Amino acid sequence: MKPARRRLLQAALAALARPARAEGTGLIVTGDEGITSSQIQSDLAARLQRLGPVAGLRIAIGPAALHQLADSRWDGAVLSAYTSAQVWRSVVAALSPARAARWSAVYADPAPADQLALARRLLPAPASVACILGPDTAFLRPALLEAASSGVALQILALEADGELNAIIERSGRAQALLAVPDRRVFNPDSIRTVLLSTYRRNQAVIGFSADMVSVGALASTVSSVADTNTQLAQAVAAFAASGRLPPPQFPRYFRTVLNEDVARALGIRLDPALREFARRPA
Image 1 (cartoon, one colour):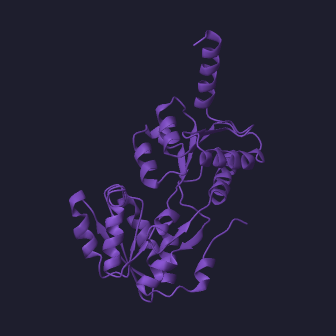
Image 2 (spheres, one colour):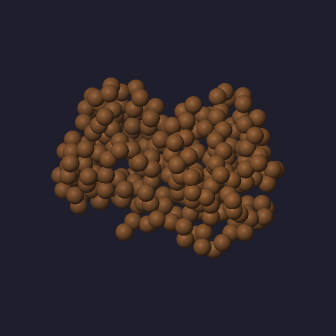
Image 3 (cartoon, one colour):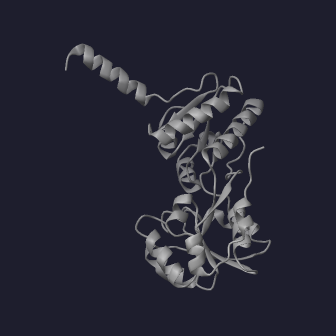
């Protein structure tokens, strides 16, 4: 390769490696140059421009960007998005206490309170729900128990070893639905089909944690769009600009409901048309 072309290629590669900057609003770090990542970045950059200059902050879009910032020398505030609570906690746990205190997140997971509120609307009263938590998602127990205190009988099952999954699923059989949370020990490419088939055979619904999960066999889920998440991120950045501190890590505030009507019919569950209106929209 000629020297001039080599320099052009090196410059292009260097540009791809640099995170894109939202003019005057701090740095948006992306670990993926795909179409979805670009859409998220451009939408968020437009929202942040309205806030004016914000210094001392980086916004990590996705797990790769979060790991990138953790491995870097950046010592300011970090706001994570489009990453599960489990992954965010594992990354932050490896930081020094001083750095970790400046990191926060808008998790990709649906809020436990919203998911259980959806279960209450989906299931005949009294609604009974089981949830399997592994060691890395045990931190969700208090939030789940608090959210279930109004109108949902919740059974939390602890998965302590990978080989126990089938036995744990069997123990959940008396519940009308299984509430799925993003836990790699429970729901991964090898297990998710088994879980969905096992619950379906027992006429047990699954409340998923994404639109994709609903499309492959879960009954329903609350989901947040890019606009929903970016609105919440902009609100967190505005709070940082005003106070110099990020809000605590938080689950999605805004959402809509997605339903799988074929699964509902197969399970004999009547879906109230008003279920599709179960949502929380930005003002």
